[in-house]
Image (tube, rainbow, N blue to C red):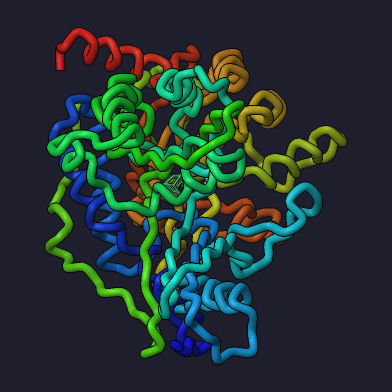
Length: 502
Ligand code: SF4
């Protein structure tokens, strides 16, 4: 009989969450570096360079890889011979570990969890509660798997109850283009097949805890149907040409994981859960000898990458920019932003649109300004702001026409594609949408030289800030004529791949 102490589980969970907030798993870095080296589309290659540089900076600076530090998901495999020296439930211990990790003053993580999800949506303040799964297994240890899942990639999860004769491959290939780039590819797809509806989702999530090993599988060949699916889907998904950040390119997925389970004769449940550029997971085992501590990797394990400034780069002064300037910006062009921009995401947009609907005045003047869709991490030490990468822009699509037409807003900065409603509004108003790289949040934050809250402080990380930026790199993703690089890029690269031109 092994005895596990309460503090050992709490400390181990807190340590694991701090660890994964700033260290990518090594298998992810190696796979991303290989994809970076072979990428033929310069825009996708640059996005991967930013993610790799960001990763190294985070490992060095012990600050989060992404401003979205995730919803904590924990799986415990509890040995049947284990007893607990504790006055808390195991669920409460895990949540205490989350609380301590997210409030660690040396590396404060963003609290992103809202209670009353279809009501008040009030931030719990410490990123609790975690989503926790248990399995009771033979043995006298407790194995714990800890992940911090980004909301942008979780939002792109898909589920279907297929007919037994339907093709899983066809369904996945139909779904992936519909997922857009809000899941910050390149990453992994976790796929669950079989069981029941909830079992398929769990299988998909669990499969993402395994290391990237598709090259090994390619070398040894498939031993079962799940492995056949992995090989076929890895190949076919990459041939879709979606590429890093949806800009078009050779690598959309670094691996595809498949787990299956026996199912009812009438059913074929299938689930996809993507894992993003901020892949964050680790595991540890408690055997009664004390808390488990993660072993830091060596900085030499990260590739030394520098970004090449392309010829196609334009420096923009946001304090003086005019609509005439915006009209000359070309799709795919790189801009280096300087000067002042405002921030705002879901909650701030909802509030602003409600205020406008009542005919009242906004607390900030948006005339001729740019708004950056971001919810930054709080700063520590000498930082002016913590990691502050872009959030998924499509969530703001329904507000875009009102914002452009009623406030004089000139442009927006976010991550991934815009939908048709937003593109139409951008074209009709001769505005622009700029894209920053999702998953490069600490790197982006280096460009922010000053930050102050200017409206809605009660919204916490969703408040409106004014940032003063210096050479913040962005790409023109929808120009003033409504051309979207997320529509054109993947089509061009799919064709090139099909023609064998790359
Ligand atoms: S990498 Fe993208 S999807 Fe993942 S947590 Fe960051 S912003 Fe969200």
